[in-house]
Length: 408
Image (cartoon, rainbow, N blue to C red; front, side, top):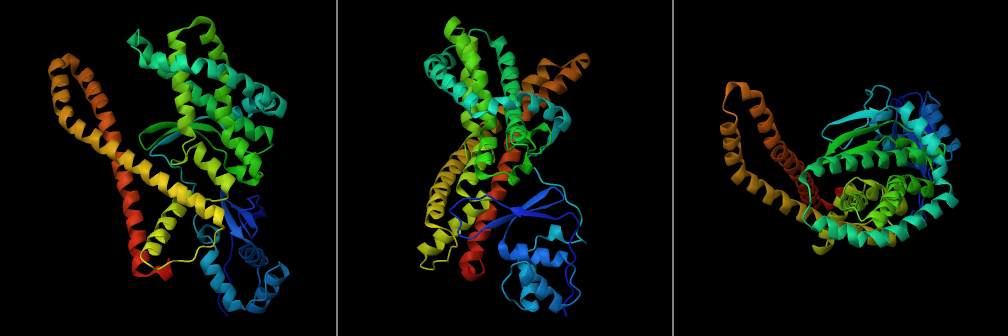
């Protein structure tokens, strides 16, 4: 008899509302604040193990009682080794959920975010949302041409740039509050709001991990909650701009609109990524994209690999892989061009800074200016390292698949 794995306490399994793209039902497993999607067979095995069977025969009986098909204990142990997340095992250490940021910090604690979200939850009533979105669509279509013209014209006062950036950052905070408020509207738990550095982009974030418990449409509303709140903000700004023609407000409108569109980009793990994931039923999109690229290469080499996905999902992966490849090629070209420019200009820029602040009394100012000069190049280098690691991971997958396609 093989030793039966001991699982941690507090494991919770509930039905998961995916999409009709999936033939087999899936279930949501929660353990220590982490979430996993599991099959019906894995669910039956976990529930059987939670009964603490003392023998192989008890394990087989418990598995059958939880809805699993007839299966020998040896096969069940093999299934557990293949499908059980290591985080479920009692002897595995508790691991915190990894955020996709180089650095991050929480600024708005859960309690305060919850109170604010509760007060604003009425904005997600369907009748209210329909009225506000209609007003936004009309006003924004009228304002956007002037906003695009204002942002491409000469800016009247460079001193307004810090204020513009400050207001843009505050609109990002409002964006995250939209996600939290959507959670409150659906009665879903959530965490706080913070800020971090994703690649080279400063980004707000809201801890809304428990939304996995919601239905697919509810998750989509939470995904769009941030953009919705920014749209509500733009109603007031659009009306102001239409009545006054203020170029400062028009520039702010364009900048907020750009960030709204950027966050809907599904190539990065922003709102668009999670929206596509929830609507398509394809989770871990970046990992699935790498596997799909491997399958496409194997097909080109005349060694097709079986896929357990519906035709619609395969077509979604086709498009997503193609667009992701094009986008990351453009992003890589941008990084390389910027790095070469920095290598050319940075030494002269630093030398000029040292000459301007040569006195002892100005030493601190010189250090601060040098840190400012090095901030952008450092962000570029870190992002380049991140991108190279992603490329190497894809190449390793390709090499492994070519050498042994059956093992992938």
